[in-house]
Length: 147
Ligand code: SF4
Ligand code: SF4
Image 1 (cartoon, rainbow, N blue to C red):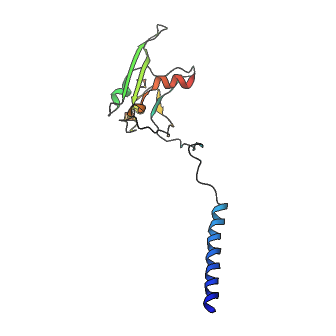
Image 2: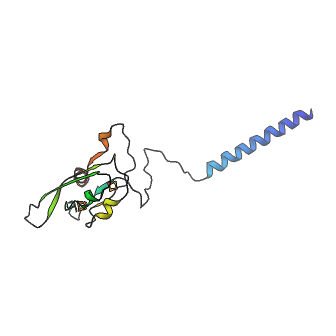
Image 3: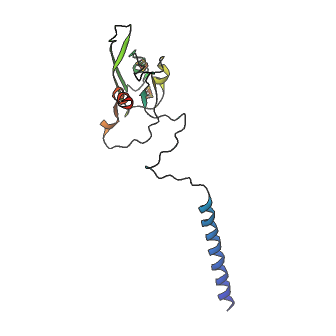
């Protein structure tokens, strides 16, 4: 008979401990997210792939000087420019391609740009089985973003 009560006590105690854990977890702050339906708060210093920066008029700040292309140790960047339509000095960017498959996110390109024309994006949600999906036309992306 004493074995019966001992078992009953052990079982009840175990149930109470288990319920305690469940109740504590139920009332503690939620740390999980409904990915991909919710977007996490991206830290300020997060490094996604680079992207072009627009000026106040929504046009790319890039003047196609080619410094970022030369600075990239992995050969990810291809940039081309054309003469300005207003006849002004210098060039404007006409093509900017990033091969993100080779990028190490080292930041050399961003640091080398004297015009603050490129920055790290907050893009974290990248997934594909096709290599071509990671080759970006950054000029087109900027134009689509501002249209
Ligand atoms: S992003 Fe900056 S460094 Fe690169 S080509 Fe444009 S202006 Fe030059
Ligand atoms: S972050 Fe580094 S590897 Fe990536 S494009 Fe810029 S310079 Fe090249």
